[in-house]
Image (tube, rainbow, N blue to C red):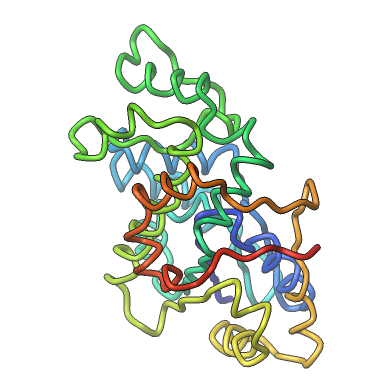
Length: 274
């Protein structure tokens, strides 16, 4: 049994990889496995509300147990929630591999804001989590619904003061930059043989990139595999919006450095054809 994890910011093709990799009869593939448990766990771990041992205990009871009892040769989870838990997963499952999947952050932010705005950093849910973290005795934890559990900078973080003044779009831009920073930092501590970096745009345009992914995961590749990546998946509304001038400037201020680090700063924002 081999295990692998697709980690990303979300809205970056994780559902596409789930569907494509599920097509093989040797793979048990998941998309956000046990999300109602893992998403609150990830936020608590990122914000230092629990330690690594506590996180590993939960992952042992969920992911490690599922892998142990799977009847397939490969077990995978394509989940942005695991991006905050890479060190714990890597220690718990020392043979597991990780694929860092990225997409142009301008497209990610637009997708979250326009399509998933009711469950991602809305004002009310963000305030509820902030109140709980600041004073858990007076403000019990919210339920494990997606809308409540998105990481916030700790008050000791230099970004905290600016974050407090962000609107919903600004919080989403911060999330894209910060989750990719956390992924990079965690993967830098692992052996190169355990990790792969992929751009969604290359998966859609370059057959050799798709073949490289299958080779890295030790999965059989067929020519028709590339066609699985040609069109977007997990599209609740088939529409695409470019950022307006205000959003573009805001994104550049908050996440421009990460956009450059990931190789997108010199590229024009593109339109998705559904």
